[in-house]
Length: 264
Ligand code: ADP
Image 1 (cartoon, protein in one colour):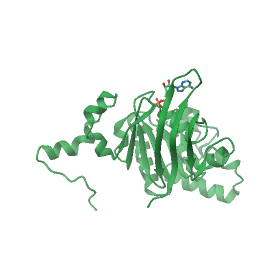
Image 2 (tube, helix red, strand yellow):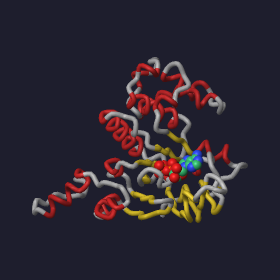
Image 3 (cartoon, helix red, strand yellow):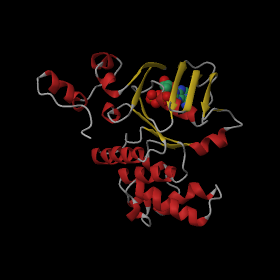
Image 4 (cartoon, helix red, strand yellow):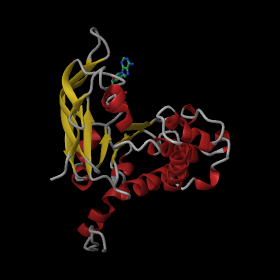
């Protein structure tokens, strides 16, 4: 059986005592090496979940565990080593003057020996296909390239989970595809859990499991195909199922059977 990495137990959260609850009694598990997509329209509570996972926020009710360790003020520094996050705006994520400085930055405070740092810069930039840009100044990169470097910076710290919170939202279609293929390559290495947060259903096709949020509660939790099959109900909560996601089913219905299983 797969080991649990993240556990949300009856988590409720609000941004202040007078504010409405934005998460209501939310419970789910995320397993080691799993790719989970969290979807929902704007304001459904997705980013709040991400911030609770690395101790940027704490729940008023319920508990969150990472590797069996409860997330609280005393544990956040341990937790943050294990939970890497990439956010929406590629321009807010750079601290270095070159790509390699930027990837090195997160490691510098962690006392990682220089040889090991060089090895990790190499490895993480290769994992995102940016190994030829080591000495490039970040402002010369496209949005997609910047987000790939942001992913490399997180990978270099070797977290157990990588969370991408709407990491493609500000990118053009080319940049979006770059990130989706990078994420899928990273997942193929099978060394970390991956959580992709999005309101765009095209981005959940490859995930193993999808958690659908609506108004602060889990609306559904299933494999992508099972979620897509509920397209009429998804539309009612503001989510459009992309044509490409239902193509296989449409072809099957019209008698043009194609397999949904991988060929090998
Ligand atoms: P999503 O990521 O799905 O768009 P969020 O988790 O960002 O949703 O937001 C959930 C709800 O919490 C929304 O109603 C939003 O307006 C509210 N919210 C988010 N951040 C804050 C904040 N800093 N202060 C008050 N309310 C907030």
